[in-house]
Image (cartoon, protein in one colour):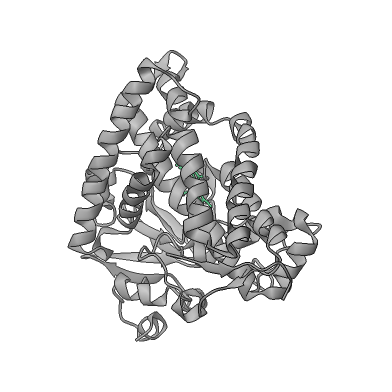
Length: 419
Ligand code: HEM
């Protein structure tokens, strides 16, 4: 039974059926059905019922409103039990704590720092694509997007040396899977997340201590040194921020490049357009964030009584905000189910998508994510004219997470001619 059938029978479906990994290949028809069904979709998450917001206007209204936030994380415990095993981070905080921590990180995470990373990103991507051209193929996830994210978030931000990159990737995968709502996880996945979380916290604490004594050219060193209005980040806060950057920044950027290349391969005319107009790489990355976004949903709790689309919410009520659906809403995006790499390049531009969220929690790493993705996509498309999928599309598999949408692997062939 698909989520579409379950939703239409009038009963409250289990969230496991709605966010079923079996729909990973294409969750969008199910989302469309939710959008077309009047009112919110109510799902059962553990022993709680929660509304899923699938239309753009409702998602944007919640994300952009101060009446919605995270409240006391205890109230979100059916969804977010991982807070118990991972250090708290400001992505789940409300003002004033959120404001204080985000401002401190912003200071270390400046626009200039991101711009300074551009030559490194270009050089690394050139090198990875050169190797792939010589080899005649690559796995876009294993050989391009993951090494790029590990080098930027892992090494340049967190200061993790190259020899530990694989270890970091294995921890990151277990922790990222564990950020799905708790009732959607198996006991094994919860145990794997908790073990990986403890390992990564211990590892980063040791690394932070080293950087306190001997600063290096990485964000971790700047974080341990950061001061604002006489305020210093505590060691626990530094670790919380690092784990946040790892979880929020690595899986997402890896998935954006993979989802993007797959979308382009499925739309050869868009791939051809991008090949002839490399300046469209930036708008194309934006369009991929709208079309097949790496972060499918987030959650919010009503901090005050609030009405969304005629439905009354009371303080403490939780909602799932399904950005993956909002960004396919035809009321906002004409031909919403069509990949159009020039959409964000045309005069008047398309409305802002929700792939990086909106409001107070708007993605802090968006400039870095945009730079990484546009460089990787432009270089691969330009340098490898004969880009094509090396496996049957039906054999592609996705990571098990439902919040994060991304391929486990994307093998492609590269040839010297535009076959
Ligand atoms: C394609 C890549 C990325 C996507 C799709 C993405 C998406 C998001 C989304 C949707 C949120 C908001 C969640 C919410 O409102 O509940 C967010 C927040 C955040 N992201 Fe990203 N992100 C990406 C890359 C990155 C990178 C590379 C970093 C840093 C290295 C990063 C760091 C953060 C942080 C720190 C927050 C929390 C901001 C806050 O709570 O104030 N992200 N991201």
